[in-house]
Structures are given as C-alpha cells and as structure tokens.
Image (cartoon, rainbow, N blue to C red; front, top):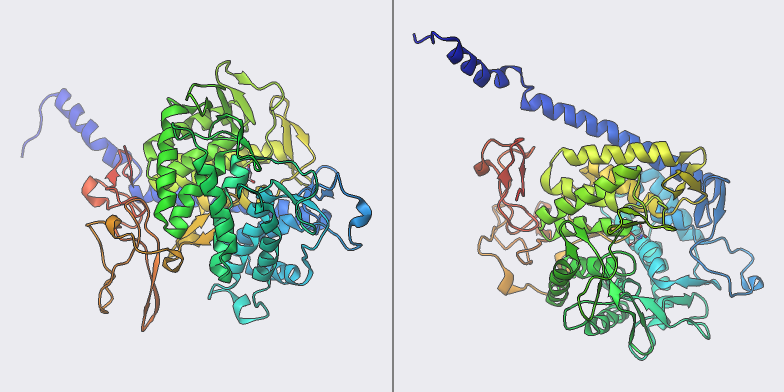
Length: 575
Ligand code: DMJ
C-alpha cells in the first residue's frame, strides 16, 4: 500500500479529505434550512394574525386600522367634496382590509376564517354608496380581492363550493366593475382617476391621471370579463391601454401623468417607480394571463427602453421620455418590485444585482425609505417614511423561487425581524413616519395583509403554489393561469423542445405559450384533471434542486432556459 512519507503530502491529503469529513452533509444542511423556513413561516403567520385580529377588533367593517389609537379610517373613499348627509345611514366603509386579507387566509390554510369572511361580505357589502373613490386603488384592492376570492371559493377543493356560496363575490365584483365603466367615457378612452360609486364622474372632476392609474386595469377587468362573459370590462381597459401605448415617444418611453380628455402628457419624466410601476407589470402579466401577443410586444419594447434609458449599473433613475436624458437620480421604495418582474421574464442576473442594492438600502436604514437621493447618497428631505410596503419582500420571494439560493431566506428573515422590532405595536403594525428616528404613524395599510405578509409567508412556505399556476396581481391577489383564458395557441412560438403529457392517453401539447412563460393546461382524463406545468420544463434530477454537476439540473419551467449547478450545490438560473 502506498503511504506518503513527507508531512507536506499528508497535509495536502488531509486538506483534500477534511471537507468531506467535517463539513455538514448536504442532507443535514437541508434539514437545517427546512427548520429555519418552518420557524420563519410561523413568525410571519403570527404577524399576519396580529395585524388581522386587531383590524377585526378595532376597525372592521371600516377600511383600515389605525394601530396606535386602535381606531379606524375609511381611507378608500375620499369624501371631502361630498355632503356627509348624502351617505346612507348604514354606510360602514368597504371592509377593505377584510377583502384584501381573503387570499392570504387561504394561502395560510385558514379556510374557516375565509369562509366566514366570504359569507359576511356576501350578505353585507354594497357599492351603492355616495363616495368618490380612486379607480386604480379600487380596482387593484377591491375588484382584484373579490375576483381572486371568488376563484378560490369556487376551487373544487374548497368547502364553500359545496355549501352556501353561490357566486355572491362575483356578483359584487360585477356590480363594482359596472360602476367603473362611466370613468372610461372620455374622448380618448383613458379613464378618469376618480369616480363616484353612485353617481359616476362628478362635475368639475380632475382630468389628470397617472400612467399606472389608467394603464394597469387589465388583469382585474379582463378576468371579470372572462368570468362573467361580458366583454365590456376587458375592452374598456384594453382600449385605455392601447391609447396610452400610442402616446409613447419614439424612444418607447412614457411620462408619469397625463390628461384623459386631451390625451396630452403633463409630466414627461418617468421611471419604474411611483405613477408608472404597475403599468410595466401589467403588460407582462397580461401576456401571461391572457396570452395575447400584443401584450408581449408592448412589454418587450417597453422593457428594453427601461433597461436602455433608466438603468445605471444596478440602479434605475428617471428620464425624460422625449430625450431619454436622466432627470431624477432617486431610488424609491416602489421600484423594489422590479427585480420580481425581471424574474418573471427570466432576467435573473439583472434581478439579483438590483435586488442587492435595495437590500443594501434596507439594511442601512432598517426599513426601505420612500425616496433616497442616489446622486447625494442621502434621504429625500420629506419622503422619509416607510408605510409597510411589500415590494422588497415580493422580489425576494420571486428570486428565491427562481434560484433556491438560501441567501434570500436570510434577507426575508431580516425583513421580518425589522418589521417586528420597529413597526409592531399592541394594536397592530404601524407605518414608519421617519426612518431616521423610527417614529411611527397611525396607519396599517391593507396591503400589509394582502402583500407584505403574503409574500413573506410564501418565501418560507410555498406549498400553496404546488401543482398550481398562478400569477399575482399588483396587490398580491392570485389569479390562475388557464389555457381557457388564452386567446389562441401562438404557433410560431411553440418551442421545438415541446413535451407531451404522458398518461397512457393520446399525447397532446401541454402548453400554449411562448419561450417566455408556460401556463398550466388542465387535461381532462378519465381519472380527473391532470395539471401539466409547462411545455419546456425538464425537472432537476432531485426534487430538492440540489446538484453536483450542471447535468443534474433540468430546464426552467418559466423561461425554458437550462439551469446550472452553483458552487453551493443548488440548481438555478445562475448567470
Ligand atoms: C400596493 O397597493 C400595490 O403594490 C401597488 O401596485 C403599489 N403600492 C402598494 C404597495 O406599496
């Protein structure tokens, strides 16, 4: 037997062997991460119920909770210019936070509370109220919340479908959608930002709106048309979107605010944050949900223009839509959704690097300030607040889904810890008024339950998504991707590495989508419904996505790219 004589060789051998002797085995590491995720999931569940229970005790059925004074605010309706005596005696707000919480309750497995809430809303909610509301906010929060909950309530696995639930939430959604339609009655088809739910557009109403205000209605209104068979909602939203797109500059850039009567821009500068953010998001997600080529074409051009004119390294500034010249060098908290959107289109490398910058700013202040001046490396003098926004948690969730890199779990943990140390009070979770002093403000926004808690929960436990194919609206409400909602099979996009459902039955294509995204297609067989994830998907050789070589990593199911093995032994879309 060969035994080395000199100490150098022994040392070398020891160094080679020792990692395998002393490093924790992969399975040990796996179980440590699994335990950590379970622990964090329970922490998020506690946060959700602390916020939810306090809302139900001190604010329900009003819109939102004031956690410091343990009272309420009907924040969705803006009643300033209306006489209060116009309000019906029984006006109680819209139970906004309850509607916003519905899909989170299902995701966290609380079907009992979900059912109780659905029944209450079915019996008590009315939109026939004299209230001036913001179309965009009502669309993403109320309409989106109701439609998503209706879909979850009629899911064959939900007890409601076998009991007293008929289609009450959908009826409410349709009633609300009908009340939106007068807003679109303008020469341009661009909707007013504000309408009165009972009387339609008020006299002397402002004609100014934002790009996201009139360009991100298509998911909810399109879904409403699909569910009711009434095409008016989808066509109103689509006409507005097309008009908006026709107003782009030769650089494929848009502004931030515009006039709905003249169709002229008011603010020519824009970025990916406030006033524009969900416009980009909805072009991409509308393509995923409805499969219309037009949405992809618009998104693709818009996305390339953003990357070309707004991006500076890992940061995004604002620019003038006419010249592409930089205007404001600011990081805004709302921009933090962008890496999540980039994950959806498969731009994982860019998503990862800009996400890191937001994490850096979060860690610097403890939470994400509303506006940070990049050119001066300082906070905006007045916008120093953090209203419990979800965007960083949202992007972290998407990046973890795409890469399974445990670093994102650590980011999630640090977000949870900050929220608990700085914003938790006896009466719920309070917004931060000033991130330099951590002074609090008396407001718990409904999106804290609809989005912030939901994305954190899904980061640590995504079991809700297993065997399901959902897209989340900009307010975090899940909508299923169904081949029946897809316009037609775009044949030119059918990938050559097409896979087929192998079930003993005649094979058929399992997807109708492009190289970018692949929807679930329900195949009816004699044995029930079989969900096929993707046309291009080739699974990793191990279900836990661990690996030693690239060959063990399959093909990503959302963008059809080959996955590779990272140094830490994870399959992912490593660039
Ligand atoms: C939410 O209402 C939505 O995410 C919206 O698109 C942007 N603002 C808030 C959360 O910050």
